[in-house]
Amino acid sequence: MSTTVASGITIPQPDPQLPESIMDMFSMKGKVVAVTGASGGIGYEVALGFAQAGADVAMWYNTNPAIEKEVEALSKMYGVKVRAYKCSLTDSEEVGNTIKRIERDFGKINAMVANAGVAWASGPLVDFAEKDSKACDAEWMRIMDVDVNSVYYVAKHVGSIFKRQGFGSLVITASMSGHIVNVPQLQVAYNAAKAALIHMARSLAVEWAGFARVNTVSPGYVETPIAATRPLELKKKWMSLVPMGRLSSPKEMVGAYLYLASDAATYVTGTDIIVDGGYCCA
Image (cartoon, rainbow, N blue to C red; front, side):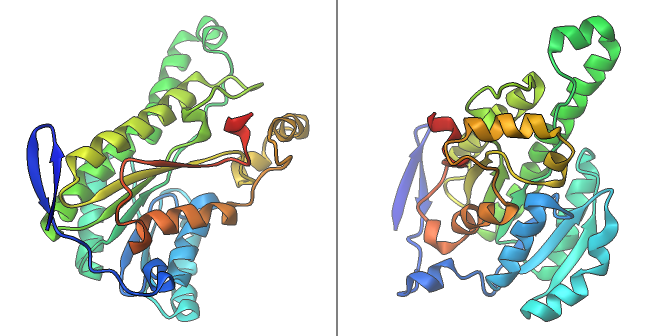
């Protein structure tokens, strides 16, 4: 047995029983993973990645029910159980009930990926506020509710299950915008929200050190459906600022999530993996 000392409290923590093979450490066979925002973009690819690695997967969605029609085929394709769950992430009670349903349906939850989020597209804060102060306030609250409060709701409810189980991994989708200030677009609410998630994860990592791990992944510019709506000139500017000179595919994000949720990362908690093509280095 080893111990972790947090805030003066000694927490007993068992040494993990790890397989000999590194490939087996990355395997998710026999594990259950829940992914929010799994109806498209990064979340969809992450959910598929876990299924490919052998996990049973709970795919969350809210406004896009398309995955309801896919889960049976995905289950057969990968030889695992995949189910879809509709949930409004801004409703704490609904989040809690959904997590309880997943535990009942699968028997446990090994990893939770809190991925869902929305972008700020309203430009400079003061300009927006001067134009329509109430609309500015509403948009700010929407960003915070979806990008920050929803993760708090997920953490609050899944944390209780992790504590009861004595194991679990929470992986939160943050952003390089939590580390730097993007240009040329101005998005104070989004940047503030993603920075909050990084520190939320670090704080929970200390609180949960005796029973679960908490980490974040910070994507850079990813070719998602949201990015597809941005003007070509803006995307060209983004690519000029990325040392690798391009946007990433959502698939290029999957490895970071798989690592953090797997037994390959049993000693990793409170960390953030930046996957941004070098943007934060420049």
